[in-house]
Length: 417
Image (cartoon, rainbow, N blue to C red):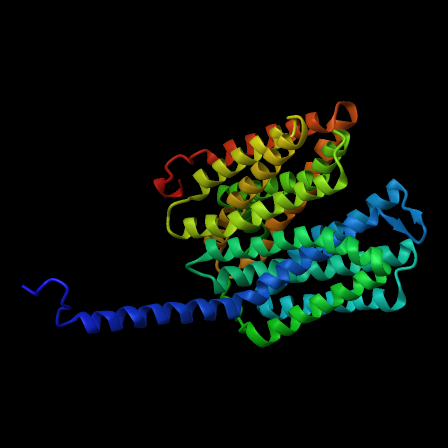
């Protein structure tokens, strides 16, 4: 027996092997970051661009406050372009490979923003045109980036999508904050200049660091096959979860400040509440994704838990004062952060061969529906009652979605739990 405290004959070899394994792990993480980092930046760009301008539209523009109908139209034109074009560009990514679609979309976003900055978004028509062009460009690189994250991050899709979602959440936070400050300082031309620079930097990063991913072999698919895929539970359950989380996120960002102002709170407090919501989502998503990769958090159980927390957070908005707003922000952010990467990972795992882009593009339609439907539901109920009652109505809808995603399919294995 070896004396206590003295290394065995193979201790040096074991230590060297451990060091080699650690070094190999570090190299693998570094390589993954080089490939995935630019795609995370693309997710940040679309979130920062959409929310940076949207948050500033209600402010003074060319010396006057925009009419509510005009404001609604300017907010809708970006999302309208995405609803129409995301499936188209997702299919294109399957045909030619996702990298050129991501790169082309970022370049187009930079050009659209630079054009608006140079010629000046001096009237509503020019601003609408700039928003439309940006939305069309984002429709290209958003689903294509998701498809690349799924393929490059294969084997660790939960963590990859968790990090991707976290970067988008950072865009949601910084968009309104920096967008408002930049617009106050230099107007919309200054904001468009910043967005052009962000998109151009992202395009360069993609061109330098992201490897070409060839189109995956595809089987011939008929229209009936597509309908079957889009109505299959393996597609509908994660898409429903993503739609519910986006509805809650959009409604929380939009109506928690309204609820706070109704309670007499300052814009500083309400702005901090929105930032808290987005920060919770950004922090939780990578953790939830990692837990999914390790088999500790499945789509069925994880989505049901995440949407349950989201519903509780929405309901907490009915509580009075700052404690209610803080509880609501933490609940919504944590629930959204838990369910979102699980939904994307499930879609990536069940996408047919060669149809990743189309799958992600179609799922994005569900997210856009939630993005529009959540605030619409809260607003409709709030118009006849109060914002708190509107949030309660959305909480009920999200809870139902959580139950639907948590229902076990007959004959399904226990692995999805």
